[in-house]
Length: 571
Image (tube, rainbow, N blue to C red; front, side, top):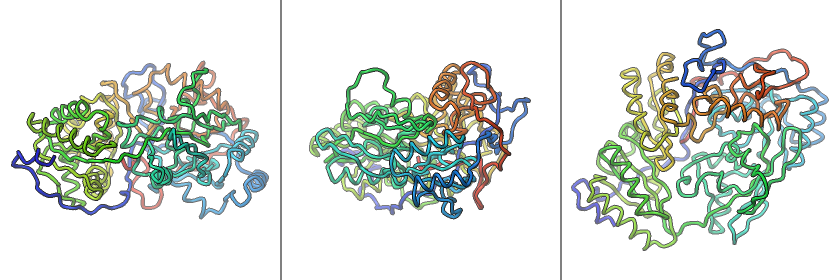
């Protein structure tokens, strides 16, 4: 197979083993929400970034606290009786759950509840409904858009102790588990049984399957196994009033009425708390190959992807890309050597199958065609686990390299594949010398671009040049402003760039039906006009608490953090 590359002068005859670190540190993303008014249509208007009076709000402006009740001594007595030893009020213990994992945004909750069963979750939510207490569900706290921590003093409901595997069918490959199971633990459990999870994320050592489902997490295996909307077979969900919705089916076919589980996949916890998941898991591949290739143009990269899909077919499991600016950052900040010669674009291709000879032959044929067609100019192949990890590190550690390049503005965009890199090029032209670096990388197979912009320090003028330009550009080409990270708190005011007004209105009706008091996840997904500000308008979600409470302080910056207005994580 390597002989294919020997026809070029640029072939590297050996691959220097690079050091591989653990999970890279995360950095910051996405503008803190502006308290803007709703647009009159789904046009790409700067009005989305303006306040009710037409003036721009501060990027750090926090949403107003809704008049929910506050926790009393009687409430704590109930929680302690329901959860003996698991109703936490020690500020030092609650603190870590009040902060996002980047330690950049902090809520002020005083109560952390750690149920172990669905029944306990039901009792808690039923009680909170009767007392008008707001609740913030929390899984692994690895969310990237401000959806995993309280904004004010909401009660934190952690699923971390709901970590039992309930069943595994070794014939069908269907796993049923509680929502608090850590993704990596599930992967290790399955690998011992010759199976794998259908998703793989950079935060797999901390993220929980319930949170993965609630955010419809993507990751590196989506090209091969599809999204969680296809692999999740059933869910158990507790609604805001404590009612348990048992949709925990293990059937691949069930056409009896509405598929209600789909409402909760990607709902970011706004419709209910996921407590258990059944998921279809693929067999563990016996043969894995990784190829690192170089291309002169993005058009050649896209043609390589087209050729790759046609010739590799069922064994193609990943097709990732990074540009030369990413490689420069890897070289400069992490001292990672380029395994091939310098190129404008790089591709990481992974194949996985059950027959190494069969897979090697298909990969050999693809590489031969790609080289003779001049689609790629250089490359190297890895079949050993250590070298496979080395090649993957060139893609996976870009985020880490960016943290060393200055203040980072990060965006997670979904676009038609042919438009992916045009956004990077247009952004460079738009910003000119105002940005230190503008880089692009991501999941070509999924049409998902991670656009990153760095500057020497936080720069409000630069941010104003990036937003709303990036969202208007994305909407112009029918893209999505959030490909895999969700809206959360940070992007809720930008929803109209990707969803029409009638669509958001229907979403609001669903929220009203399942959580009429709005006591579940607060200040997420919906823009302000879908809440009490539009009370009385048909089709608008409104919260109906009984009486106002004194305001509390907005979320604070953690000491030493770079900003409250931008954060992001491993992509």
